[in-house]
Length: 94
Image (tube, rainbow, N blue to C red; front, side):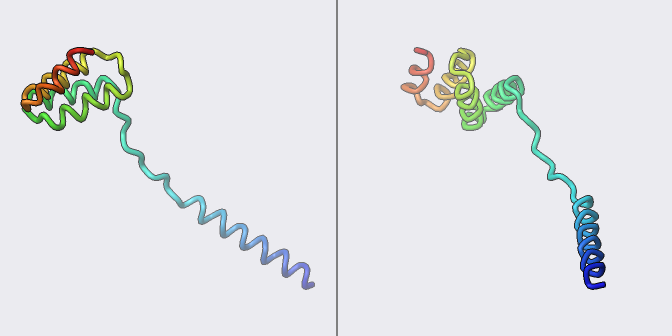
């Protein structure tokens, strides 16, 4: 009899755990930013004269694709607009 009670208690606790696990929702993930979106965002920041944001986004593009010459050019324009001429020339030389 004790064995049946123990098995019944075990089954009830397992069923309760399964029911509570079904109620959990997955945590929403932030959207993935693609390179095209990042390049467009960097260009928009440059156009809006938000040079720090443009430099940040162009730098991210360069980090993921070091051969992307348009990102170097955009970052050079941003540096030039901030009077950081040495950094601008360094990007243009790449």
